[in-house]
Image (cartoon, rainbow, N blue to C red; front, side, top):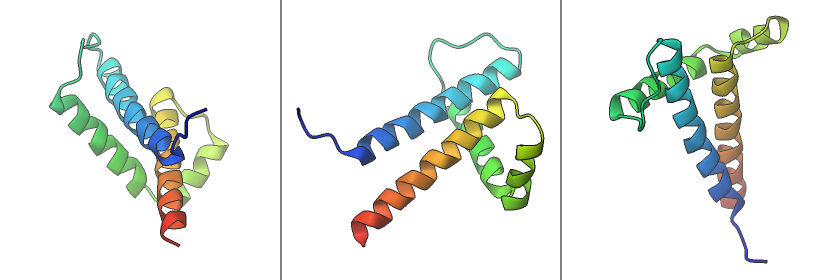
Length: 94
């Protein structure tokens, strides 16, 4: 069995989630899904990701007490993957 770097799979999942978030934003805007995502779609996903990260820990704790939608679920999963990437990189440096 060939060696696979766990960091590579995390980085790929992060990029996949970024694209899923972009597609979800298009869908929630009521537009038909594009055949390929444009730079504008990915920029909107990046802005949503940044806004989600800036909400702070208090806002994140509140989601345990109320249902979250599909976009928020993707954003939360993205944040968790990014945290795992940071942990893996820190572990490798340590």
